[in-house]
Image (cartoon, rainbow, N blue to C red):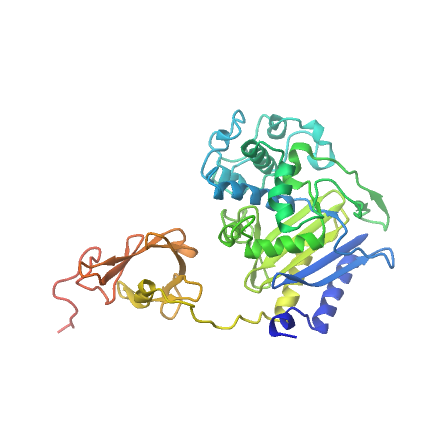
Length: 461
C-alpha cells in the first residue's frame, strides 16, 4: 500500500470511536435512524449508521431531507453567475427581480444574510405548509420584509435564499431545480440529490418529547422556498459535495471561488462565538479548529455537514427526526475525532518546476518602515509576504498577467502588490496598497511616504 492510500485508512481505534459516537447520539437523541460519513483527502474513509430496526441500517445511498444545506447549493449557483460575469455581488437584487421593493439590498447581502430581511415568511410556518400558499415573491416577503437596515448586521433569512433562487431563474431563464441539476449535480456526479424523494429514502418522524412514541411528519413541496431548503440527498453525495467545497472543480467553481465561500462575509450574530457567515456557508469553531459547512433541518429531518480545511477532514450526518439529535454538533465531533486521533500527514516539500526570475528577484527581506518582512516564492507559484518571526499580517498573492500580484487572504485580500523598478531595471521597492516596502529600513533612495530625514540614522550624542 502506498503512502497516500495508507493515509486514507483509519486506524481501528479511530473507527471504533466514530461508531461509539454515533451510537450514543442515536440513543440519546432518540432518532429512528442516523447515517454518517467521514471524508479525508477527498475520499470517504468511514461510513456508519444506527437504526431502531435491527439489521436495517441505512447506507450512503439512502436519501434524507437536508434542509438548509440546500442554501449552499443555491450559493454555488449564484457564484457561478458571478464568475461568468453575469452579475456582481455588489449589484442590487432589484436589477434582476424588479418590483420586489428591495431597492438597497445587494446580491452579496442576501448570500451572507446581511440584507436585513425577516428570518421567516409571513403567515403560516412555511416548512410545514404547501408552497402553493406562497405563489409569488410578494407572498414570501409580505408587507414588512425588513427587520433591519440592509448591511447593518447578520440576520439569518430564509426568504433571502428564496430570492436568490428566483434570481438564478431570472438570469438563466430556467427553473432553479433544472439549473442546479445541469450545472452542479451532474458535473459533480451527485446522482442521489434531488428536489423530490427518490427511493430508497427515509421517512420523517417526530418523537414525543416525554415518551418513546413517534408520529410521521408531513412531507411538503416548498414551492418558491425550495432554494432555501427543499433538497434530499445522501451521505454519499454530500461527501462528494464536501470534497468539492474544499478543493473546487473547474466544471463548477474554481478552488479560489469555493475558498471565497468559506471566508467570513458577515459578522457573527449578536452573542455568538462563531467567526461569522461566509457565502452560503456557516463558519464555526469546534475543538479549537475552524469549520465551514452548514446545518439543516425540516420537520422530520436534521442534517449537518462540516469540513476542516486545515485537517482535510469533513463529516456528514443525516437523521430522520424533527429534534433531539444535534446533527450539526455530531458532524463537528466526527471531524474532531479523526483530526485529533490521526493528524493530517503533510504533503512532501517539493521545489518549483521552473522558477520565475522576476518573482525570484522579489524574494528575501523587505522593510515596512522598521518592521522586517520577508517574501517567499512557493512551489505553487504564489508569493507569501509576512513579518519575520510571525505575529503580524501575513498574506499570499497570486500572479496577474500585467506583472502585479493580487492578495488572496487576510488584511491584504484583493489588494494589489507591485514591484516598482528604477530606470536601470532594478527593483526600487514594493507597493502594496500604498504601503512601501524597501530593501533597507527607510531607504533614502525609495519614495518612502513622508520622506526620510536627510541626516539619516544616528545616535543620541
